[in-house]
Amino acid sequence: MIYERRASPLHATRASVAALWCAALACVSLTSAHPLALGAVLVAALGAGALAGVGEAVRRAARAGLVLGLLFALINPLVSREGLTVVARLGDWGPLGQADVTLEAIVYGLLFGARTLCLMLVAGLYATCVDPDAILRGLRRFGFRSALTASLATRLVPVLARDGRRLAEAQRCRPRPTGRTLVLRATAAGALERAMDVAATLEVRGFGAGRRPPAARVPLSRHDLAFLASALGLLAVAVAGPLSGLLRFDAYPRLDAAGGAGPWALAAATVLMALAPFADRRGIAP
Image 1 (spheres, rainbow, N blue to C red):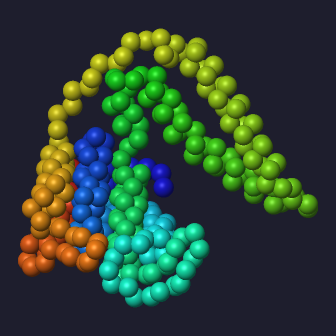
Image 2: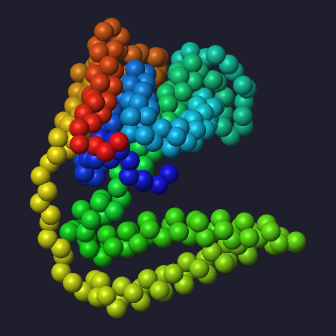
Image 3: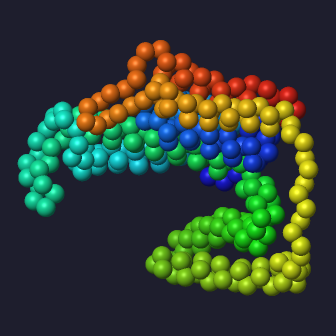
């Protein structure tokens, strides 16, 4: 997943605001394990990916998150010894003791897997909708050399990945293909050569010896304001939901979750606040 400029309100937003919006959406799933909160983040992330034109990349992130989530959902009931509702007794596992599978451990494992899936979706949105160069330009005022190093790394990693793919394709064309070790060795040698060339170029141009660039004063656009308001609203839900008890969920020792209309209202508000900024497409090229 690599950032590519697209005609969407999220791409039109400045990088710092878009990053804050992604972080706020992730915070909703981190602060509460309530199924409705996680479901709201899931719907909001998938909807944002579709509205931002990066649905395919978000679906790839969803597949990776689903694998990790299922892994957590399978492991937690086997390693957790908490919970009072025993659904299966697997006997004595020696040093691990008595292995009893509880309903609470199964539910918590499923919710932990759902949280992992939500975070992977938000990470996919960040990777494809937030310009990494703009983020690094904002950080260079605080650490010019560190920002320059990170910028070069993010530029060279995709280049080296393409080099590795080309070398692997060329290797398969040979009558007797060589091992993967030679491809890795050639890619690593190319990385060192590129590093030397880039270092020499930067030295000639005097990078690292200059002063820190002044801060650029750019007024907030209407898309910036919309996503900033959305991020603040999501952060309010992430903080107020668990504190007020409306998104309370306790897995151990017995399952106990907040019910009623409150959790449904907060879940609906989360989805609406997250997707509302996408409704304004003024000033965005088709």
